[in-house]
Image 1 (spheres, rainbow, N blue to C red):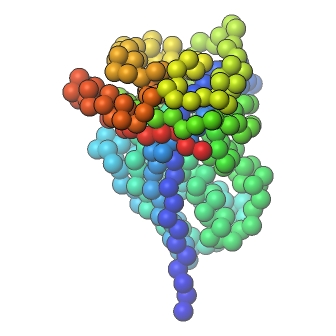
Image 2 (tube, rainbow, N blue to C red; image 1 turned 135 degrees about the vertical axis):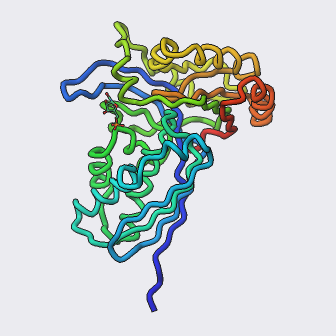
Image 3 (cartoon, helix red, strand yellow; image 1 turned 60 degrees about the vertical axis):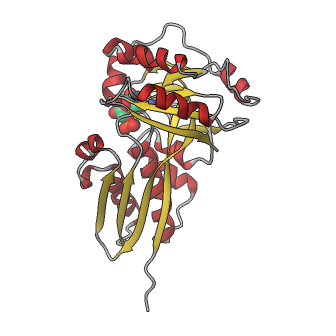
Length: 293
Ligand code: C5P
């Protein structure tokens, strides 16, 4: 009797509490410093080992995203498994059933998280025995944010994002995510970015996070992409103000957008703000979640 190899895994998103872009590099990427934390909003992934073919079935929680999901072969999960087989000579296959809850083109890292999850699960189920270093090399050949999701917790990431140093955040923070009815392309946001003459330092925030406690005021949050986004749409300044009016202690865009988040003293405060704002922003998605370790 053969026992089919199956794994069910949650693949979490992330937010950027800090993101500064330092300079353009000769390879076309940008040197950056960012602080990222996983969040409790996660995609659900179901893996089943097959004889030799790769199969990806995607369903989405949002009608908007269902139309915008990339075709299976272009999906980063598919490309990750394909690259892993190329690098190792493994001929086994995999079926992945993906239930997408993390909005796409949002700056929440959903695709990178899915890729990191696929790398770890396939390494185990295909019994490849790759080391964390080897997995990170493959991750970096596929995207800049994937290495973060291979590391165990919140981190400060440097280089093009792939140099990951774990940090500690004293406590989990309640969040309200607000996803507008449009996404933003990471490549287009880097292309439109104005580089700072004097880059912001991450050091204040790193010190604050070590002792942060509710109600989470006075954190030195920052995102360089925020000014780029505000040049493109008045929505960002509006949602920032409205989140603060609704009780957020801080609010900011995550990554290269377009999702915005507010930090709230408690989860019930975040729910109350969602209820207050939902009628005025009927085309936005509101999601209450938390930062997680
Ligand atoms: O690495 P990833 O595929 O996520 O990046 C998408 C695009 O974002 C890159 O092709 C590049 O244009 C831009 N990028 C960048 N500098 C980084 C990360 C991404 O310019 N550090």
